[in-house]
Image 1 (tube, helix red, strand yellow):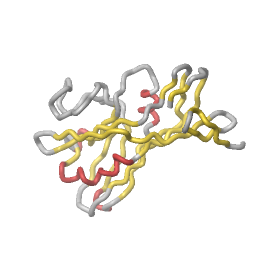
Image 2 (cartoon, helix red, strand yellow):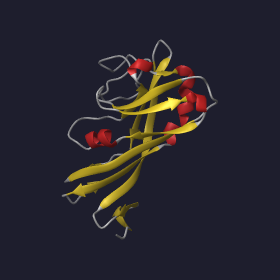
Image 3 (cartoon, helix red, strand yellow):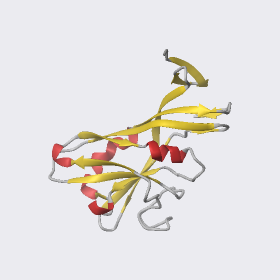
Image 4 (cartoon, helix red, strand yellow):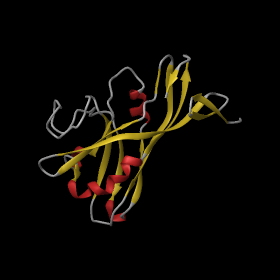
Length: 185
């Protein structure tokens, strides 16, 4: 099987296999931190659009690798990334949401365990089910990074600087288009 690069739109190239599998890195284009009155936070972020004018995209894999920095501390928790279900602009913990802390799909998420006793590390999130939703008919306005409910309400405020690399992270997506001609990536 030979892979080759093709131009999809001006300035955009993708690696294409004979079966038309595409691989692309979607940049994070916007991040926003919302903080609770109790000193915990959630991080909202949007990534580049991956939609089709016509046809259907089938996502084979989607992963976010996030570098977490900082000195080792005796703390660990489960991070979760959920799809956001309400449009946001300059959000805060209370305002603009049906529930405090953001409107997101509780039952659809990707998770990664973070052991801060190891200091700096890279955590990987498998976003396959989340990205398939993004390409479906349901509304999704970015993603939200938080902790699992049993680990608290949000990321402890003192740990927020550890996640600064999210702004320059990318979601690596492998997908295939079925039908259609015009593609907006």
